[in-house]
Amino acid sequence: MDYLKIKNLFSNNGDFALENINLDIQKNEYFVLLGQSGSGKTMLLETIAGLNECSGNIIFKGKDISLVATEKREIGFVYQDFALFPNLSVEENIRFSARYKKIEDAENLFADLIDFLKLDHLLGRDTQDLSGGEKQRVAIARAIFSRPKILLLDEPLSAIDPTFRNTIMKSLKDIHRRYDVITIHVTHNFREASYLADKIAIIIDGKIKQVGDAKDVLNHPANIEVAKFLGFKNIFPTIMLGYESSTKVYSVDPNIIRVSNNKQLQTDYIFEGVVDECMGIVDHYKLFVKVKQYQFFIKILKRDYEGCYADRENVIQIGFDKKDISFI
Amino acid sequence: MKALSKNNTFNITLVALALIVIFFLSVPIIKIFLGVGSEKLLETIKDGEAIDSIILTMKVSAWAMIFVLFTGLPLAYILARYEFYGKSLVESLIDIPVMIPHTAAGIALLTTFGDTNIGEFFKIFGIEFIGTEYGIMIAMMFLSAPFLINSAKDGFRKVDVKLEKTARTLGASPMNVFFRITIPNAKKDIINGALMMWSRGLGEFGAVIILVYHPMTTPVLIFDRFNSYGLSYSAPLAAVIIGFSMFVFLIVRFVANRL
Image (cartoon, rainbow over all chains, first blue to last red; front, side, top):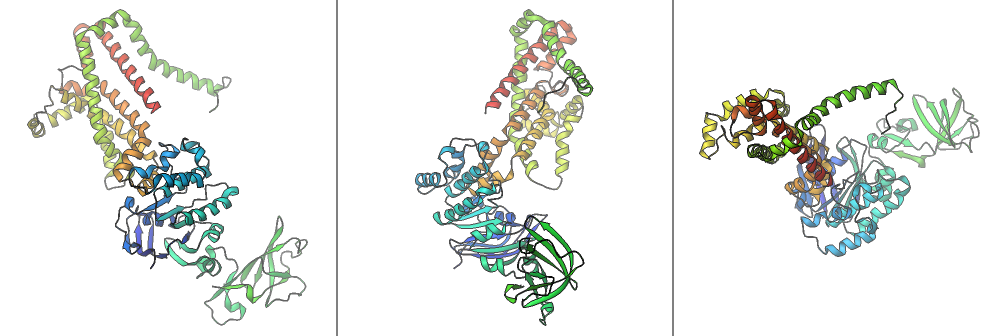
């Protein structure tokens, strides 16, 4: 049985709509919702939390909670900017939920959170005096202290100094396991998603475009829209490789394409093209090569191709192997 | 913020013009205290009629403010948080009393709460508006409530709605969120608005005099003494009410800044 099932969910806030959202999330799954800004990620989290009106069903452990009030849904929410209550101290923030519901084994949980998230020295402080990382730890502790079954994280790493992100990503994984929660983590960052996710859903314009195991989604986009969003380059029709279908497309990684100006390539596919542009960037060149009407984007390392020998208008060969192609 | 440089023509012009308005705002206040002198001030403080009117004015203005805290805060919150049909009309309605002449407002109140069906309706509960403290209260409320409502609305707008949403996920009901998160985080604007309303209420004259001549609020008493006995009888009372208002205003500001 799915632990959290979202079925035919629609929500409209006047300017933007979530349309027909269907998701199945299993117990203890770390689920990442990947999408650009304005794609509806936060709105979907808020709808799951009961903060937006919606139609459809949100089923948690077999029970429809779509009409249950937010405060009764057993959900923890951490916003991108952490939304710490400025009128309360750090400790009061963490203990906030205890005022409104019975927290099982509250003192042990509090002590454990303080220890695990290293908050001991911050308890008496004002929330305005905390750094981004400290605020995030307090916000997570506050959410976990309410003993949620589902933890919703809205871009939790975007306000964090990049040097600490790896450590925090590891902590998020640990929190998820340690406190036995389903985590739904919203981000626009593929790196975050690939490190953290057991399962990924891609959301574009309020619609879920692809859901599946993290590796599968990130390596095998279901359509051109998802492929483009995931940063796939060189998306061209397979007909150019000799396949018959004119509707299918393929993509090839710009780092894998080989280049030659003296016809010495030994790859499965070789094309002749005209250099449109060659740009030197720190340790590599960016080459734009026109093959018939298709423009390939290629990255070549400076140490492999000394000097950008392929000047504009030069005819060169480009090539890649079948194993390096992703069919979409 | 940088210090104001003195050797620059633009800054000198700014300071000169600013000094004119500071002079205009402060000199009459200083002058009334200096002109009256301490002896007359003490005499006025001991004068029962004067003190009664000051207490009445402060008390009724405070009641008006408290009433608007209960009814105006929910309105301010609705305006700050929700979109609805006719919202701009409601916002304009709130601002109308600030724009109209106060005597005209008094007449409008008289034609509503005087010898009318609405006035008769309130009489059932023993509430009469002509010549009573209730009349003073509605006159003060009508003309000064916008200060509190608009200030509270600005305060509520400054409270990030995500704080309220997070509090809901932590188990707090909408009512708990309002009292525990929204109001405490908007308290500066609410207190400022309440102070503005209260102090505007103290000074209300035009509408009050049309509804209630007796019992006399301080502005009415000042007018009455000025009309009957001249400046030397009304100035000490004016100085005392200005002094009292400033004193209470400073105390409340001081306490509010420490909350």
